[in-house]
Amino acid sequence: MGWTDWTQPEGFRRPVHVIYEKKQHEELGGGIARLTMNRPEVLNAFTGQTYSEFARAMKDAEDDRSIAAIIVTGSGGNFCSGGDVMWEAEASFEESAGSEPGLNRLVRMCPKVVIAVVEGYAIGGGNHLAYTCDITLAADTAIFGHNGPRVGSPHHGYTVALAALTIGMKRAKEMHFFLPRYTAQEAYDLGMVNKVVPEFELDNEVDKWCEQLLTMSPTCIQLRKRSFNALMDMARAFTGPTGELLQKHAPDFLGSAERQECLAAFTEMRTPRPYAVYAAEQTATA
Image (cartoon, rainbow, N blue to C red; front, top):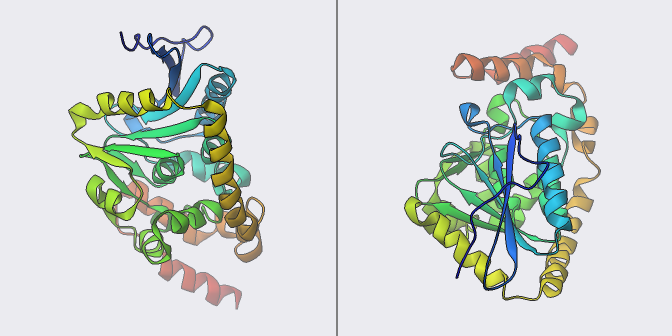
């Protein structure tokens, strides 16, 4: 006996941005849930609608006492490329610039173990999400990294601080300032990934980890997750409420020519020149 097939719960059978499924283990008597970000045409970049669908599915999985773990993954051979640049350009301040983006907070506050299963690209907010998850399992083809300062995405605060807690201050600064791309093995060596396996073995590896969880006391697991969260809350306390750093230090950034240059360069597939625009803006306001 083993796992049943994945099935979509009643009321979740017409997904747009997130496919939500569950399966049970016939011998161990519990199950797991899976949330698959489903915008493969943009490497599963998320929008406000993604957040809404993700939140609804997470709530259902949290409330289901038979669920031991929640899998977060992407469709089309990629994990997630972060916030959709066009959506971020039009989104409200809270949506596009919060210090703890909504998907990350849902993962962190969930009492169940959340496992990121990464194939292909985990970039920007997708990278944030991968290392925010409690466990990260990666195919050997996965690529991790950030785009933020290059595309004018002002995410800051908690998720940046969490990178330092995860991989150390020096390497976190390298990742956020210079935007290198890391292979799955490099991400493992840094401490962002728990295990790397060949792509064809990834599903079986996920099942193995989840089978182990089904033999553990759920109450003890939840207490331990809350204990880890208590440490992470200390980092969040230092970074302040959502958006505080941006409001304090760069309140005009979202509408600035500097940011528009980064966004335009991204869509035009050219090298951005934000420093030239930044210097001109500063001279004009001097």
